[in-house]
Image (cartoon, rainbow over all chains, first blue to last red; front, side):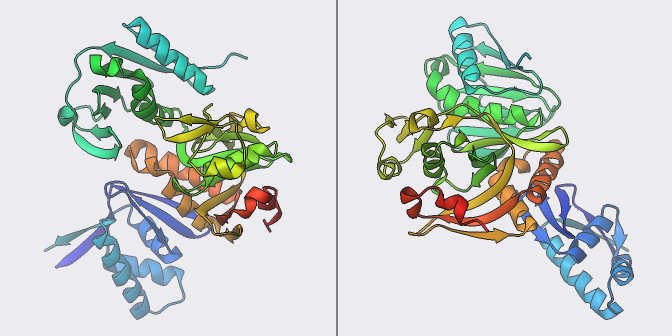
Amino acid sequence: MTATYVCSPDIRITELDGEGIVLHLANRRYFTVSSSGLLILSALKTQQTFDHVVDILLGTYDVNREEASETATTFLAECAAHGMVVVEKHQ
Amino acid sequence: MSITRFQVNADDARIRQTVQSWLDGLRLELPAPITLDITRGFVPSPIEAGRTIFEQPAVTISHGPPSYDLRVAWRVAPAYATLPKDSTHIHIAISDAGAHRLDDFLNTFLITVIILALRRVGWHHVHAASAEDPSGRGWLIAGDARAGKSTTAALMASRGWRVGSDDTTFLARDNGAFCAWSTRQPLALRRGGHTLLGDNQFKRNTRRNKFVCWPEQLGGSWTNRIVPDIILFSKPGARVTTCEPIKPIEALAELVRWSAWVMLEPDLAQNHLDLLNTIAQRTTSYRAQLGSDLFQDPTRLSAILP
């Protein structure tokens, strides 16, 4: 089973000095995200696989695959928990 | 140059006159016309008004199918407004009970409708006081109801500053830059604030349970527009006033916090958020504690900024 990730239509993002503010309109909450989080959310304007998210981090930061996977796992889980990212599971 | 103001149409002449006069008294120079059509008569129940997306004391904001127009309901003496998504033509129905309480209608219900209408012309509400110091620097002081905004605005007026608002400010783009608009309303202080100020110009406003005064009565003047250079995100302080600089991203998060309407109406949210971003980048922001030392020396506020 694979999963894909995409930003919720309820979020709005703005970038400032490499960091971001994310509004969740439905929950009426807002979040500050780091540069790597902003990079991931920018990529998730269209549906992406976990591996693609990891590749984007590898292409931008000086990290190994394990570190990139850990960052992606933590960030995506947190985003999913707050409804910022929609996860779809595919057979 | 002619000034664009609100246009009020109503079948009841007294309502039309009262509402038009109240709106004119706010002295807003609109970037585009806003029209209110007010009908006196039957008012649908708020329960029919779709999903609630925001509530204020006595006012419910909702939307729902089929049009997803925004609907504002006044629960006290029913009134009901419909704000179409892409239009500044607003329809309002007011009950007979509401028509007999026009002062409350204006200051609890219609003010909310106006805040939402102004979003449609690119003016976004922020819970902040605004002022301009004698050297021409624009100031915003954002914070909650007990953050000292009104008292500080009154102190600024007492030192000859131009004061816009003590509470309600509208942020807008302006020829590639931005500015902050204010309505013409008296400064309204809680008991204690005006006593500390030592001024007897204040009059008691029983409806708001506050003491009100115009900036001119304190030695200052009123301005409907400033260009913000400095933003203070204030908390009520202890004895001594302090200001700590914050990064633009922190200022942006604070602006989002005090501009809560940014969360309403998905079609307008990005524009509102981007405006806050521009302002956070181009101003200098501080976390401030406004202390009682300002009563002895209001100019201290300027002096302590790095």
